[in-house]
Length: 396
Ligand code: PHB
Image (cartoon, rainbow, N blue to C red; front, side):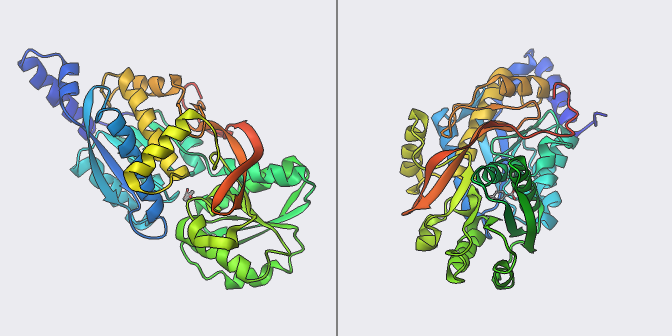
């Protein structure tokens, strides 16, 4: 059921004003700046991830002359602190108080649910530039909701497949106890199973805690050949260091979703050497788009690009494709979706298209951390789509 929302009222007001001035509505829509509400973590364990997403989105916008679909874009930044308890108020503030036309966010899988709800309720387009919560592109899929990143299931599934193909029979999963950790554990399990291996143990601690000692103390006695993990940002730095310091590294290899070593290799230092992970990005991907992107990102930020920066850049490219199709009208949800779905996104990770449930179909690379780089050493799974189970949208 369609709500008579703030947006419907605003659109009506604009139309009335436009007709009174003898102007057609699209001209009004194009002249007005387009407000993008950027809800990301700029503090806490995921702060560096949010900063890279924001910087790369801004980079792509600047490369587009500051406009999408002919409309100048203004950004409203909001720090969500990766705090699910504050998420509904933050998302509503952007839509109802700041009157944003488009939502961009976020990193944390719990927090993103408030954005998904706001997007569905108010029919505001939402581009998710990280959070992998599978529901966003499965049972809660919706015409205005798109992801430029991954589903939590995808990278860990790739890792599980690689291990099983190597003959590993038993593995454990270690993670934070929230959607991203659980769902990537499901992917790991499914990937292992597809090759006849088994996930025998899952060990968790609350997000964003970093007291890993009780978990590390148990791992040696589980009888597993490999430990897989989902951690990211500040927590990933600590876990990888603690795993090495515990002496487990030489007995049970550590692997995971690529976030475990992504954007954090410098502080992890030698502790990360040899860790293999699967991800839709990696160092040494040799394509012209990646070369140009990495140079431009470095010039803008003095930092090396990582997968988070790629997500932010591609969120900009997706939004540009949608708004070009609607000539800048963010309220034309169906046409915007058609524009995004028709596009092949020229991503630094390699070109990709979205699945019918609006999640990237993309290759999972196998990488190995060595001397400060996540070197691509092979392909884990080519052109992997999230199953999109339970997505009931037309066309999905
Ligand atoms: C998530 O919560 O979905 C999440 C957070 C950080 C990552 C990946 C996924 O690096």
